[in-house]
Image (cartoon, rainbow, N blue to C red; front, top):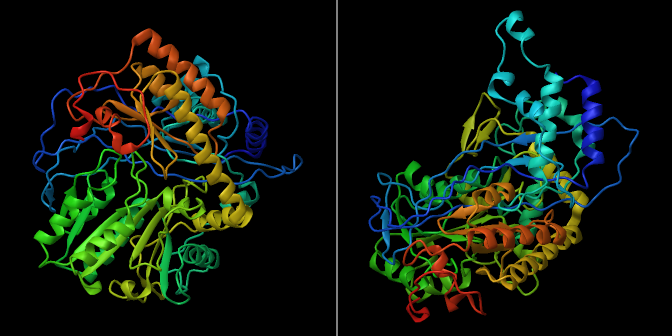
Length: 557
């Protein structure tokens, strides 16, 4: 247990520097230029993808400097991730015995105190040593313990590391601006929402009332009628996708799952888990699903039910699939409602889209069946979490009574983190509709500012209309990529503009980007049809700085 003195010291340091810190760890991406298409059992699919979702921050609150404070941080693993790029125009069969398609999961360090404009200095060597594997190992006897640093010193160094890593955080969709200090007192309780959120278990230390309130909020946000919905707070967006696709499989056991090649990897993971036939549909240059190819594939397999995953913001480009156009395709092909099932992977942007003026509506007033969204991305939360929401009649297909719990089993997980539901409830209550709207407007406007700044210095850069994800040519210096924790896919990188990304930080980032370009030059297209060449396509609309390299005629896109 962390001594109370260290808690107070860490909290004071965290609060005093909250306005000038934020950096998330380098995610282990190495610069790997792919010069030849990769092969996989998916056929001639070549695609490097990375999935990023997002979270929105809480409004700043007054801090009682006299009250005892603690810090809460969470550290995700940093791994080098291999990315498979699917860029061919052939539709790939994807069944449970084939390699994955879609995009791999990004990992980054997450810090609850990552707001502000300042950049924290790197750790001194002595603090780095305290966080080495040798220093943090758990001793087996008193002799070993005597040779190791004290736990308080280790945690103090770790706090400094998280401040440093959170002060420059650009590539991943985590909102680092929030303050949950009022909830610290509840961390001493083992809050477990095991079982169904609407069926109380015998276990009394739960937060079901808060979880149900969160579910009600999202049901209202996505236009569901009273008593027509069911949902729960998940561990992350992936769990929400796994649950949504499970319901689809139970409703249509012989259905085929259709999703784009720029889909998050969890959708195709679900296909493998549930032994479903699935098809990976190529995308348009800006990242949306190729609607004509989707229609052809559905027509070719019209003897089987249709299960479609609609991306409400893809991982790398932030592209939003056109739900209305997909519904028109189903109507044109005369697919009856009982023969299709639509899941929406909302990740980051399903939380933002309702607050964007004149944006297309994604809601249950349309014939969709489920939505999954991340809670820790747009809202901001110290632990990963999410929300799964579906039509009430679907969940009955997976429900089982569990006497041991005195509840029913309807969720993917058994024991469920009751803290997450409490934190989401608190965020929604404190921010309110106007606060979320303010954060969304900030993200969209600041993303346009970043796009314009990068374009002005002569580098390729694009931004989808309904997105805060700015896609740019990959910097040539890995040190810069790791410093700013940019998420990369082959020869492009991206920045996900969240509420904690400010114009001041953007100015500093672009300044370093220019220095990198002047010293190392610009990235050349890795191959014909690479992600960087797609930035030159007129399909994005507007104009952009032309990438370096031999590009096909834009008409060929």
